[in-house]
Image 1 (cartoon, rainbow, N blue to C red):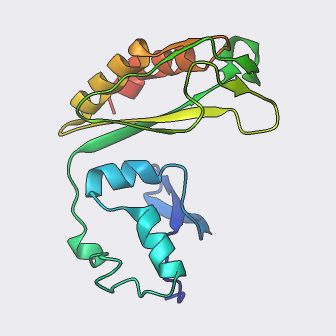
Image 2: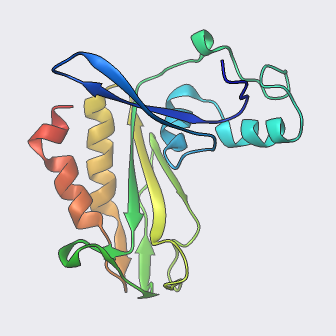
Length: 178
């Protein structure tokens, strides 16, 4: 026990040859990938983190966080970070005005972002992430299908994005095999 009651991520590596786990680190903060956990559990981790910071206990009714063994798990979720980076030029960030922006949607699709709109100016003073795309489904195959569809439905003009790279990753046989 470490006496920490809030959002955090513990990272491990697994050695397939030796069948051993190795501790890497613990991050005492919400991770960029928290959306995947929220989608498959139905829990609002950001809300819980804020309430805990206000003094509510992790297991209080206000926070509504179940015991670890009772956390629901429904289906599969994938996340792609859509960035204004050029994959054909070593992922160098690209800047400028978005002359067009259309994002995908539908059941099993979540978008988290703030700069995704036509006319937005992308500057070098902030992170290059434009939007997080989360696709989910009852099976890995369905989540993967939704992710592939969503990536192909984005229409972003004015800056280069990493979408072509992400489409290649999602279409790769090794990735598709799980």
